[in-house]
Every structure is written in C-alpha cells, then in structure tokens.
Length: 112
Length: 110
Image (tube, rainbow over all chains, first blue to last red; front, side, top):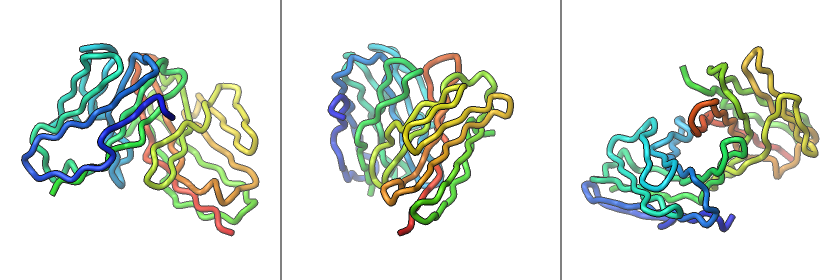
C-alpha cells in the first residue's frame, strides 16, 4: 500500500548511538502508531499520536521518543540504542478505529 | 492478564482441510474486532473485520461471541497460500488503541 512508507527499511547501528526512524503517510489519517515486533511478544505499542504535536506513550516506551510536527510524518527516535532494541519496527495509521490499521512495510533494526 | 490471547499453534493442516482459530479478549467493553494476516517478514494486513452478526468472505468466516468474549476465524478448503500467521485485534470504546494477539501460525501442507 503506497499510503504509508517507512524509512529506512534496514539499519545496523552501534550501541549508544541515536537512531531515528521515519513514517510518512499520504492518507491524511489522524492516528499514527509505532510498534515493535519480537518473537514471543507479538506487536507491542511504543508510542502513538492522535494529531500534530499530540502524542502518548504505549506499553514499551522507555528509551524511545517521538515527534509529529506534520500530519504526514511520525518520527521515532531511539535516544541511545541498546541491543535490546534490536527488533522489527512497524508504523501504522488509522483514520477511524472501526476500520482497522494500515501498516508500513517495517524497519529491521539491528543494534550491535 | 493480556488484553488479547491466542493459541500460538502451530497449526499444520493438509490442503483442503477446514481449520478454526479462536481468540479471547479480557475487556468486556471492547468495541471493534479484526483478523489480520501476516506473512513471514512482512507487515500485518487486514484480512477481515468481525461483526456481531458474523461475516463471511469467500472461504473465510469470522464470528464474535460477546457473552464468552471470544472471536473466531474459520478457513474452509485451505490453500497453500493460506500459510501465514493470523493475528486477532481488538479495540475498546475509549481511545483509538488496538490490542493485538501474539498470532496463530498456520502451515498448509500439500
């Protein structure tokens, strides 16, 4: 689905460095989300946004921050990457919770 | 207790078989229900919404049982291409957050 894109698709970074992942949407949806997916844990919500400059923490927010300065962009920053943050990160968008989410293709992040 | 629980499987079934997955949810105020499909190393994609009256889409049937707080997905005449992980998803009547099960793995065998 071209309505949501994530960048980069893959990244390898060193422990202690900051990392920013980008989610861009062209659907003008109000809600945007960042999830991580790990074996045995499924999808876990990191942060979400319900509008420009309106964000809130999810289940596993420690070590992550987000920003949404425009409707179309939602940035996830790992302030100081750790090996435990090696994961697949998915962005999702939603216009109305009754219609489900649309996910981006994911970012595979490895922290060495 | 987790918001949503699923049997992780794996379910290994022959082509043509019928297979059913169940998913339970803990919040009686849950409002919307979905099944997603996730292929290996891909993003989850919406398979179908689940309505109170039940709904069918080709070989797939979804049911909701509010009294017992579970949703189900039935796949008839399984195809090799149905092999994937199936995630159940629930939303509540407050906020706009979705709760995911950990997924049920299905492999359809020739």
